[in-house]
Amino acid sequence: MINQIDKVLYTARTHTTGGRDGTGKSSDGALDVKLSSPGSGKPGTNPEQLFAVGWSACFMGAMGKAAAKRNILLPAGVAVDAEVDLGLTGGDFFLRAHLKVHAPGLDRALAKVLVQEAHETCPYSKATRGNIDVVIDVA
Image: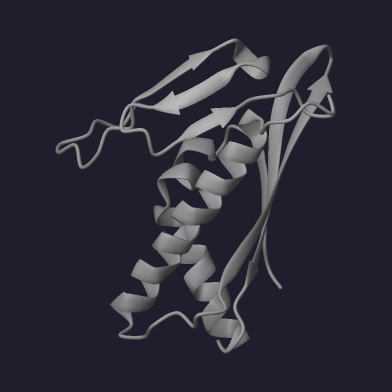
């Protein structure tokens, strides 16, 4: 089932040329990146790194919303380390991900609750749910 959007809050517009060895730019000029294939040694980032950064940022926002529902603020040191693996199975390419959440200053049980709620509400988590192998840990 595809979820429908009732109200668009933001639309990201980008233009990419050259694929993994090209460039990508946002329509507002805020993003302008050189792309390179993982392991190529060429300068630039790759789609897996961009995905990892995007998911981490979104996930932290979802954690902040979960904390706000409980009238608490996330400590300044909260961070997410994301690993996005590009791999092969039977000749087909797949992704898998591991998010490690660092929540210094938060009770571990509360941190786990916030992480679980964030994983339920984060749009990136929703988009990947059931599609790729995902592990989320609280450090």
